[in-house]
Length: 63
Image 1: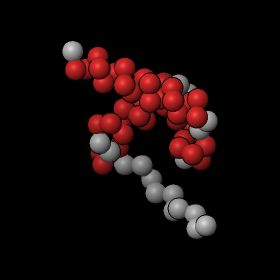
Image 2: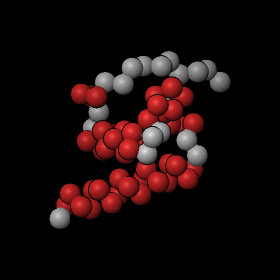
Image 3: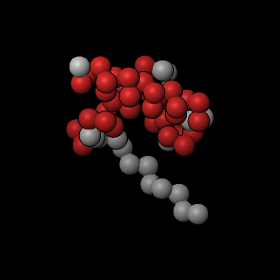
Image 4: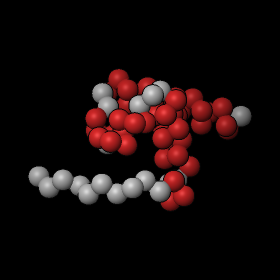
């Protein structure tokens, strides 16, 4: 299996949803690991936590 090239993250090219995902990862103290090892390095529990917080924030923004 070929490894993906590590491309730098360009915040200006991210969608609002992707920005939110990175913000929440940072709040949870997971951003460093994501930046070094990618999203696959997170456990399902950590990924679920990010998804749950994203949903919560989206609902709060809609109100």
